[in-house]
Length: 451
View (cartoon, one colour):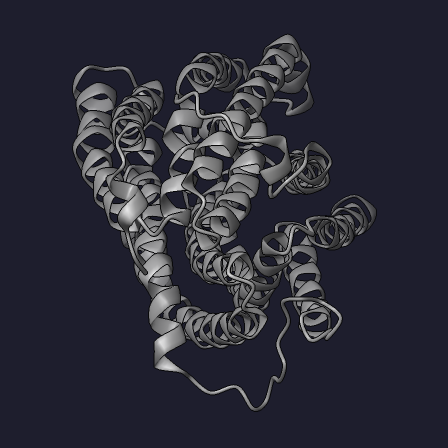
């Protein structure tokens, strides 16, 4: 990393500003991941087939969430750059255009998912047990209805973070996840429902939170807000800037998640124990990257305003500073995960075979997260905020196809490593893209990119 020093008087963000931005982000991400973990534990009471079904469908849902988050981030970066230039009207225009596109795009995606349900269940997931298939079908039908509302929430949350206000999305996340947990407890434990008891609270909590965000994003006292809702029309000039960042980032995020989906049939072929272990590991390992992911959102907001102000010395200063925070956060969480691993495995009430596989995956992931993850996923947020989205996209896509997909089949299937081979291939992909991003950042070509 560089050693650029910025005068204290010229800082755009004080340490207190960064704390106010990062701490709510950490809490919000923790809540989302914790509820996912608690959700899977509750679903485990229905059986491993239900855990496997939720894991498979959530892989599709995460793909869609990543797409909406990336598009919202594109809009938030454009809005943040406008704030850096002291152009509030341009920022509000970015809010309106991002919201409009998010709604239209998410409705189209929802329709496509419903229309392609058979393809997802039978082709993408491959051969799975009949009970798992039935649960997948029910869960997919219910949660897909929440897609547009989730897109609206992601759009609004990204705009609040662009303003330096991450407390509001945190409180909304608390409410959404609280509703989900209470609903799960009532339907799964109280009424003894099956997979429907996990799907319905997820859908209802997302719908209510999306409606809530529509009201909040209209508040005129916010420096970034939607000045109108029904009167929004597509404006190509503003939309072009948003999509210039949003589409490459969305493709990059989508390809990363698509890599998981493409190897699902490979994982499914190893049996229900491997599917369940993979599901548990996915839930637990989400905590491992909590610090890096939260700091990444903050870095995107901070860098966007610095780029808008044309101050690349501050971009590098805050990148160096926040990368240190990211590494500390990732290391802290992984120490806790490894220390509590035995307790976590017991909570899931897994079979001995499933527990052994999950333990191997989680420990391996912890080691690689501490060494590699921030360089691969936190650092490139600076490049994206400076409009260097093309490099990030192509680096990630090429690395994903060659190393994540290719090595998954080589290691898992042909080298006999099983589901652990899929995770090893994933971390090889991390290492390659991390090297590429560090090389790019240490140069200066990204400082001259235009939206």
